[in-house]
Every structure is written in C-alpha cells, then in structure tokens.
Figure 1 (cartoon, rainbow, N blue to C red):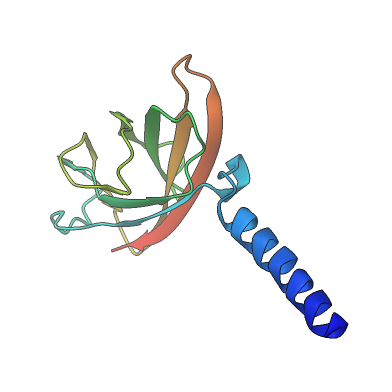
Figure 2 (cartoon, helix red, strand yellow):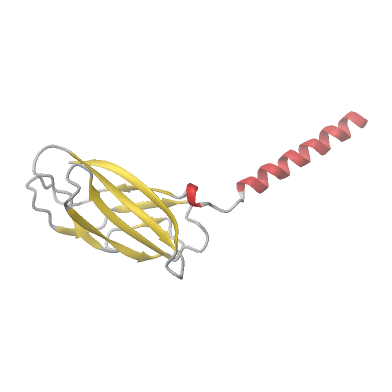
Length: 138
C-alpha cells in the first residue's frame, strides 16, 4: 500500500510540472511566424508592384506585444528596399492580406531568397522579440 501511495504522489508531482510548463508564457526566443505569398501577381521583371501583405501565421508572441513591424528583404539583392508595414496586434494568430502594402518580390532573373522579419513591440515601442522567415520567389 505504501508503494502505491508513493507512486500516486510522484505521478501528481510530475503531472503538475507538465501542466505548469505547458502554461508558461512565451519568451522572446519562442516567437516565430510563417507566411504564404498568396495571390500576388507573378513578377520576374525586376520592377515590383505594390501588393497586399502575405498571410502571416504567428506563434508565441511575448506578453505585452501591441505592435508588430514587418519588413521584407531580398537576400540576393540586399540593396533593394521592398518595404513592409506595421500592424496593431490584438491577439490574432493569422494576419490576413490587406493589413498593409509593400513592394512585391520581383527578381530580374531566377529565384531569389526573400526574408520577412517581424519585430514585436510593447506599448512604449520597446522591442520584445524578433523572428524571421525565408522563402524563395518565384
């Protein structure tokens, strides 16, 4: 009987630890996102157009995040500025197209690597976390 009581006690302790860990707040290292280009016009002329933002799927934003800045960079032509935008964050996990506009990816030849960088900020404008996501286009 004593063995069963000990086993039960250990099980309760382990289960409590697992539950507490799963409810721990996100940290700056946990912030991540992915994106889908969506319905942007195919472009390989080197002359991008203004388009709606891609679909962003966010995860593990730090507590206190009220704003997210998104910036796009062509890693194969880093001097080209594609812009980005800032959104007010109210807890949504998916940012739909239309939240901001930017210069579409449009490499003059071949595939290029594009990196979106997202910067989470608090109400004072302090940076809480940054995350990056890279995809090829086209």
